[in-house]
Length: 128
Ligand code: ATP
Ligand code: MG
Image (cartoon, protein in one colour):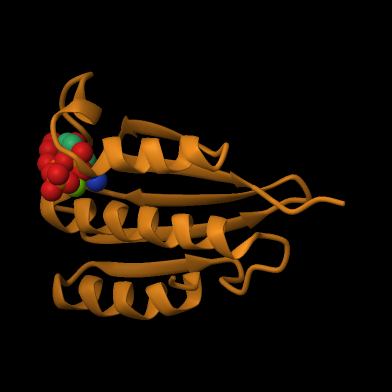
């Protein structure tokens, strides 16, 4: 499994090589998220950033980590072309895979596309 922090190190390198400027907001050291859910988040973030590099033509990418008591929200945002067409999720395997992994852990995903693309990913936290 991969901690979010470790995956971020690789993502920094991938974006740097593609000349896409990374902005990181929030603490990648997750405190209330299970290891399994963190592992799912890491895989989703990797696929999202791979898509930014492959499809968006963006010059900038923001990764925003938003903790709350109930859930962890991760936003991957780019300033590229946006996703063309309604059925993007069914065009490849990446987004579909993200959706299925998230459903498995009771998380969810939303894709927003206007100026650039934003992928919003949520997983439940450990709450006692
Ligand atoms: P795979 O992930 O299976 O290698 P893929 O990347 O084409 O192939 P998905 O990751 O499911 O498949 O993405 C589906 C489609 O959504 C892409 O083909 C692309 O057209 C569009 N897309 C996804 N992310 C972005 C993005 N950040 N900017 C622009 N288009 C995007
Ligand atoms: Mg993909």
